[in-house]
Length: 230
Image (cartoon, rainbow, N blue to C red; front, side):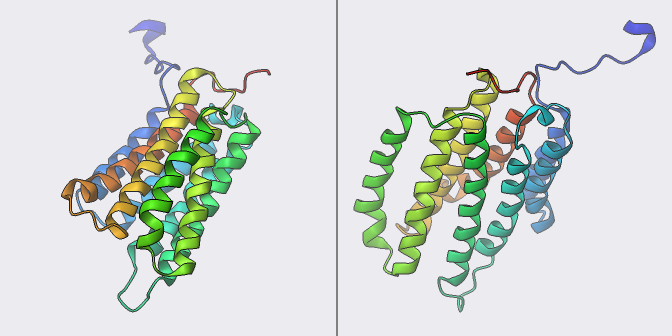
């Protein structure tokens, strides 16, 4: 073996090999392993970001870990909405995901600024989607307001990710991760509010959600992810 018999280190141009843990947990969750595997995906990603030597190069990286941990609580509330709970848990879950996006946004703005061409395009597209589709379908005013605020936070989060002052691989991974969250949330809106009957909508929600966590963690642990000079 090279180097006097020592095992070769994994290429630093790849994300951390520790991502195999949340990847395994995501596979178990999709196979029906239950809540521990489901929550374990985000928890493992948060732990990797907190401990990874590569992630430590990123200013305010703990905001990423906090966002992922808050998402666990939001997911718990949304997945346990009983028939008698009304919109309460739904709004509470949205509020926690809103807080998670605020943490993402704070991290992204610490390391860049929103992508100007993308932000108005997202506002126009999702603004029309909300006005024409979601607003008439959501009858309760508190829930409608929660969805609107969360949508705005999601849009700003994606635009801020696209404007990161990071090397292209890291920036693209972060952007794809937030886009995955927005895609998953859009599918939830189609299912919950517009009652889209397609089984594909339900089938893609959680894979997109888990993939988003993995992509964000990969962006934080890839080589040379330190902030570029302005």
